[in-house]
Length: 342
Image (cartoon, rainbow, N blue to C red):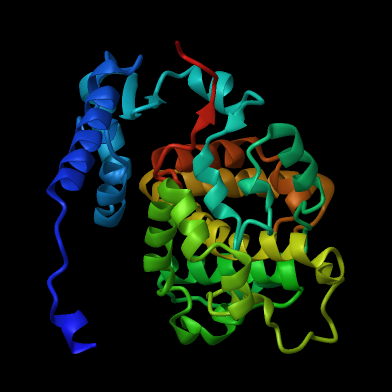
């Protein structure tokens, strides 16, 4: 055994040369010979996903995308076969069209590929059918009321606590307790930072992810951090628990939504409140709009505006959309497949 350990590993220079030659060929083909090679963009992004991963870890990917579009135009090449579009018509013609989603979304099947949530499904019709079964209810008043009971708080933290407790209320008919305790229980939210970075990076290397983590064997080992489903008890006053439905489908939606949707909702809330504070008269105009509608339809005795009324408040809805436009919760492009460009 010692002889085997001390024996140097032979280096095959012809094999190294072949590997370098293949790598160089791929780089040249992607950078200079691909049908999209005339579209401007970061040189590294055209040959490797490392550009995206680097800026995701650095935390400035959204700023980089905006900066590059300002400098180089409305069409930017972000991978060897992907183009970022900032033209106003792109929202309706690309994101609003029933196009197949890009392969990046496959990563969102958590804990492995057997658990297909709507976001992980790339076919538009199949995704829509799956989404109908998990439409959110309106059992959120108790969470919002609990938020309103805290008068002097750090809004960024408590908006995050609120969004996570809303996810718990929707999926498990029981809040996680972040608002009630006023703290990040077990650092569950803080730990999501590196998990998010890992998930974003591995989405570009889907087959590696399946081989190492996203497979039934790893799920069977029960070593992945998706223990949100392990609710030890159910409150007597909780509403109908959707866990009684198809377990695998629900688990796929619940695990991913608790993490992904909660943080994006928190970002949206913070952006909305910040820009409302910075806009003189905005709060008062929204308040008048709410009081006028409640004076006509009732509901003024409640501290929480109902969802049915909120979606009819035109100025409030405009402010919400403006807040999302000023600071989008999702910093990266969400790719769609439009077919062969050649």
